[in-house]
Image 1: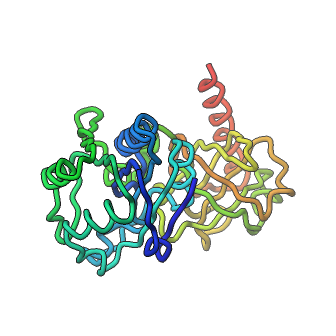
Image 2: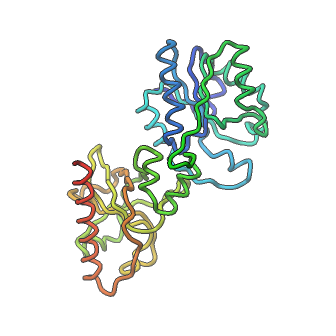
Image 3: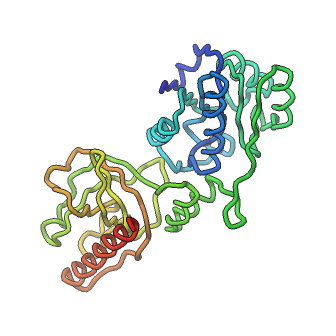
Length: 312
């Protein structure tokens, strides 16, 4: 898979592509339908599939706010590669691109840069300055240029639209189970394992793989989760604490994962992906270390039981 980013885009001159355009932050089941349509069109029409997306949320510029991403760029690229995408074009949304007219976007990007022969978008897709380009305008231009257009219908679950906004709300509220349904995978956070204060291993007998809170990505509600730790391509049942540790260390917040069955002395400096499977309890302050150890043992057994049931 070929990836173009930012300045690389200036010199792109591709031909014969099946393009999917969207925010594609969460890469939820609605996004996947759009992308799969581009991939299937590419195969059927002898084209290359191309995904165009922004590395930041357009609302960062439009509303001068900061919307935290569901997935890092690296995670999005990984997912897209797994879907069989040929080309990914990732642009930074800034004030310059915000002012591009609908005509300029269609002509300069879709025709000149991408050489689109097929375009796939979502039902609520808009583009160009102030969102002046909609699916009706896109349909007219595609018809004039003999480009196949697919507008993917709204995807709903339990009567609610599947959206990145809803997924952010679910994760922030700790409902990672419902978020997993909308994503068709567990929400995850990746990071390099750093050396902590080693309280978990030395005092509690529960060593943890520690990663820092991601700066630009959403984190789950503070609490304890059944999780799955993935290191070097191998997955382990785990328990993860997001937030602080009031019983033993009130001064540091982070993501700490006890990986069941891993050799912790060999993990420092490695990358871990933590998949959040189920919220099991809030963070509590225990009266004694022994009481905390007892609770951690219960959490560990819940994780082991959870994954045994998943395999049935």
